Image (cartoon, rainbow, N blue to C red; front, side):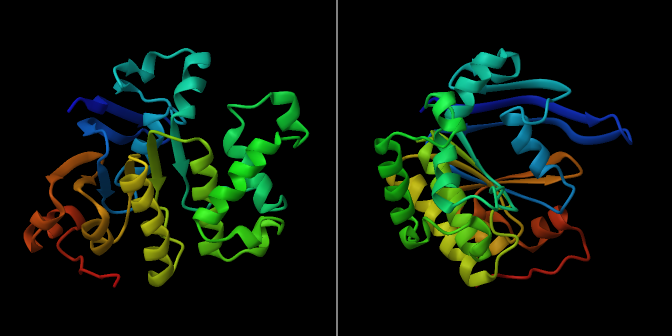
Length: 256
């Protein structure tokens, strides 16, 4: 099976503070994988995800998506590539005062006439698609509420519905459940799992809890101080590996 995503020698230095956030990272992802990134806060997980779609410009290295060099793409080509790469954020990244439906429809901004989308005049077919995606994540009755009226778990489902609107091939989820309680975390992760299994979407998710990584990931990549310190199956992380990733003082806090 051909590699869907290839990251080669990716390095990111934040010049303010001279911080080396990513240190010569290389890995590849096959189509249909559910790859989980784990590691402490500040290990480089968020920076890595944002360098893949160039929300953050890498300092050095290459990213290839289906053989296309993302790091060398022009602004126009990058817009086309980002249509195929959806992203879900830790703090939901919704327009809080807008309706749930409008937030979901924003996932189609790369597809519809920009003049119409600027005035929130979406075609009926797009509205129908948005409602179907809200149905899919279990909150169609929330469509006309303001986004900030919803609970955290519901807001993250809006984020997932928005991502579904892109019909993505790659979904990147940056700490998608860190602001949620354990039960809600599992309900959100199951929607990502459905996208992966039913729609064939490749998922790249950063998670804090090892138990969630073991439950949902097909493969794990662990970062520490901007370097890969583990790459393999979730079942292969034993106590020694856990301490290597999280430090000697770390205790395994599990989410059931």
